[in-house]
Image 1 (cartoon, rainbow, N blue to C red):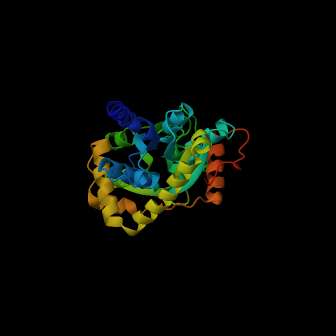
Image 2 (cartoon, rainbow, N blue to C red):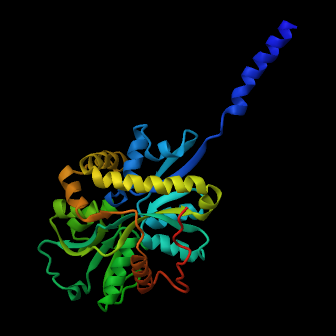
Length: 321
């Protein structure tokens, strides 16, 4: 009898971990390698160091998998494809995706950053007024991304006809890391981009800021509707953790900048000097608030640039988990 009981206990001990161990939940999280995505970059750094900011607040059975994107449309395509759950992203691609899906795919669950973008020209450029851009070439990060749409809307507001392939001013979508070489070689006359690339152009190419885009949303934290519906508890913890992280960044600038520089180098293999990052930091307002007034401005910019057509009802865009 003792042998049978011992055997049964042994079998139970072998089997017990299989029934008590919970299956890990994987959250696929996106961000861009930009200072304006500081929350994502710094959280990614914490994960890389096994000190996960979000992981600690989500529990031991949650794993974050980080994905990086150069610009917003790519991240939105990943959400549509079901390969991304949450991401930091600019407002224009998020709005476009929201409206394209009739409000069925995207939700803004927290703010992240405002401002931090600028239009730069060469220090000795003859461009002095908006009218001087006629016949010129301007680089933007990607067709349909936030800076691309801001650029096109601004040009239209100053009377220029701009198409995807030309017009009075030619807008050339160019990945952020490639803009410096194109600008230095004379391939473009100006660049409308976002930090840290604005400061890099200033420092490495002697660029002059023609226009600083201050009154604009730069980054949101968005969720797929599916993730929000299926894992609202986790979405709430993520939104709350983003608020905490934003506050930590505001209160710990030197440490936050150090982590960001290290992570940007790991992601882009590019060096960013502490002075350049500190310079860029001054242009950005890190905030978890979502301004409805700035949403209205982003919608109008999208319409003016020809990217948002038909209904622009944003009543379901913001959702607090």
